[in-house]
Image 1 (cartoon, rainbow, N blue to C red):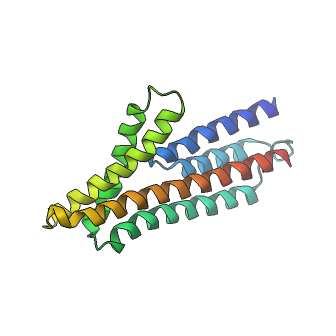
Image 2: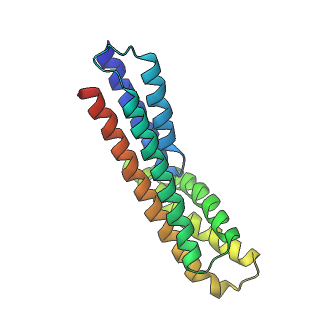
Length: 177
């Protein structure tokens, strides 16, 4: 029975990991889920998670957030964008990712994932343009900032997904060994 519960944990963690594609806090949900599992599983169970694993997951989740936010903000900042553009790029990326999830649905499994990442980038791009227009810049001047917001969002999301993959591997390794 313990192995079945551990497998359910892994399936839930994979679901949490997928939320990263939408710009949602999938890695943090992985940490919370693993922590609840560690609290509810007896320490003598063959599939128990130790607190060292939980601390490692917390460090990784924090690292993923820092990388994602830094990549997006640095993209806008390097192009000379305003804080308003950076904030709207973040909001736009989450909205775009959600739209992409719906738009990509007709293509089984891969469609929603790829569309969520790409539309998240386009949402960041749109948000950056709106932020710069709101700050009084001309439309022509927003293009370099929008491009940086797009690529920053993609780089940040991919880095966060990679960190989430490492988190998943840490849990699986802790369950097995």
